[in-house]
Image 1 (cartoon, helix red, strand yellow):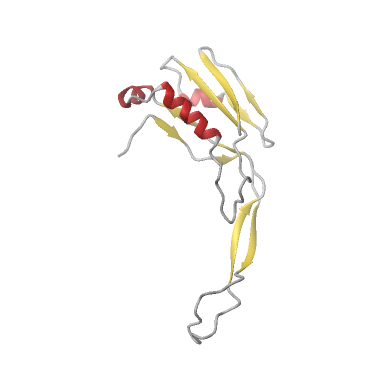
Image 2 (image 1 turned 30 degrees about the vertical axis):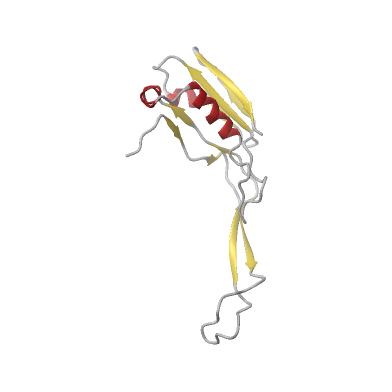
Length: 149
């Protein structure tokens, strides 16, 4: 089992998403026709699926005890923040064109009280379907709102 100080959940959409299914046709077919090896099939088609629009939210936490044990430093925290903000830089595929996904906002909470649970902190953020959000403050917890790239 691998265990480290940083835990990041999978991202989930705030609302329903519409998945578009698109038919695709190969413009060049290099596959051999089994029945006639000298002929290339021109009717090879497939599908790709994409979500045109969605607002996704993910949560994470840094475990204080494991940070101390692994020497995860404040400098590492700053590198993690920068990495999350640039998460989708140079990320693309046929179903997800370059620049089609972005990190809009990172909400970063910092506290020194080991008793504050991650669940309590995560519940103080309410994200709406349009990407707007509301934050409720918690005593002893500093909130930092970082704009995406």
